Length: 252
Image (cartoon, rainbow, N blue to C red; front, top):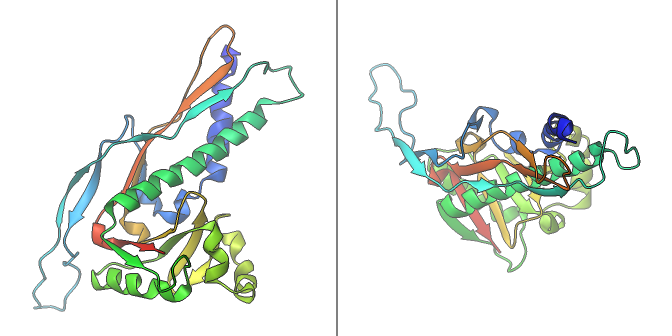
């Protein structure tokens, strides 16, 4: 079994990549692998300013760039590998690795959620208690735009999908699903809407170019190198909006 540790890593990395939706939610240049558990993330304060002006015009004051101290989260866990071996074809290691990859992909979204819940700049409330409608996104979207950012992602609980879109609208967008993550729901204007399980009475709106996500490489070890019964895996992550005024929370 000890010789299989590298095989486990290869298969889990591949499954993790297949199941991950992170590249659809955050611009890939802001998803970075780091050697140690991340404890700082980039932060900016104030409206962007800067930008472009006509010749002879005066540039407005720019925002302040700094760092944010964060607490990393281990999204790993433990899986049973008792009885698995190269000759055990009744339950191949690929099955275990696929489930671990899916588990990690789900857990990284929890880190994304937690960063947004902690650092989003403003909370909004829906018109109807307990229900999220498409009309509820306009006010937070306008607020983010007023801060000179462009809201383009909306993360919603799966159980709110039917409130946002009629069956006809979902069918209209069905032809585009193959170009997106399996978590893609549809669009509301410029917003790409995605779902996740671990959201409760909350939706999260943000600009994908203003999110940061740092993570360590996947690390594996057996509980016992000679007769392993458990595979212990870890990935340390941290995430937050770079500027708090580029993200908003919608509560209902």
